[in-house]
Length: 115
Image 1 (spheres, rainbow, N blue to C red):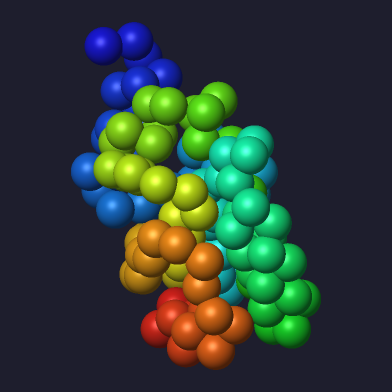
Image 2 (tube, one colour):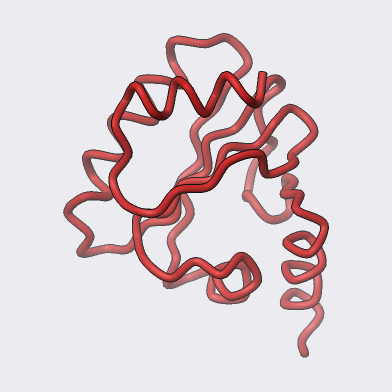
């Protein structure tokens, strides 16, 4: 297994994602991670919802990851469809996961478990 795939698998096995996996620094309080693909219509709505929620809470960021360009991480996290959303706490630990387009109220409730 190539080194970057091992790193992704290791991060997933620990249930934790950091800047190396996210492509940027995670949020101070929480991170909303969205796996998307180019032709995914629900991904566009999900992007808007997550960005809106992240904008409502200080220290929370939204990170969108292109599933097709990040296959090792997709495999390590067992992402089977897009959109798939992970909620990370301030330490990068995965505290919630959902597949499909989320409702804003559900994102806010899941965020409560992380902050």
